[in-house]
Length: 235
Image 1 (cartoon, one colour):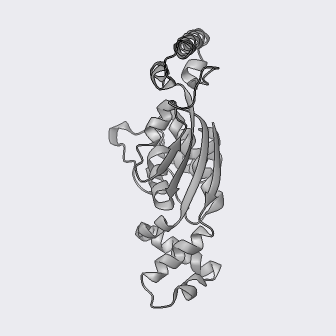
Image 2 (image 1 turned 135 degrees about the vertical axis):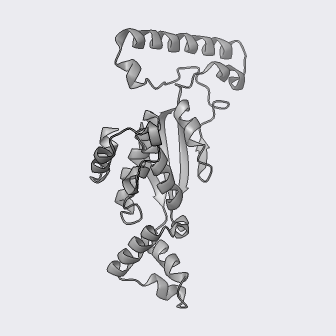
Image 3 (image 1 turned 30 degrees about the horizontal axis):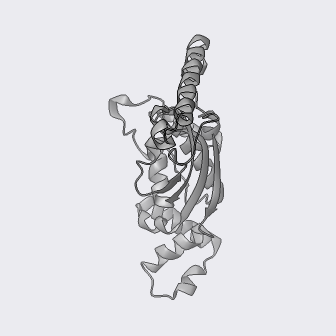
């Protein structure tokens, strides 16, 4: 898996703080943008504590992602407030070879991994035969598995990112999208640490919302996410 922050709103914390001040100030926009770092930090801490998160929508982050499975991307695109551009299996032929993700639970068991690889080989041969027989790639792709790797560009605002992290950094999330979310969180924490202070699984800021399905390790999760980068590395 490869995750890169392509670009983001310039000075995202400055923009968000100015938007927050605008709601309660008669000052000009130029004045609102002129904030001392300490003042900005206090304001951002306050709006996060109050849940006044609409102003976070003014800060936007764009990522390039490669090497995730179609199983992962199907989960990712359910976050409808984000924007996605994904590699097309209709227009991009995989006749040479399609790359595939191997789940750790399969990779850890040699016999199952061997059978998994053999199945992927057979799927590739059938896909290639279909294309060489004149079947359009848009129809040949019907045999491609959820394991097939994909790449995409995605854009989310800071508010939706915090919501995304609350859901997908949770230990109850599927392992691959959890790894993706943890990597994205690690990246945006470096780019805008104040906007993403306390971001992560929902249990960081209250009780576990999973009820009887809780992982049962809330304190350990909180320790992991209190150390920048640790949760991403351990995913």
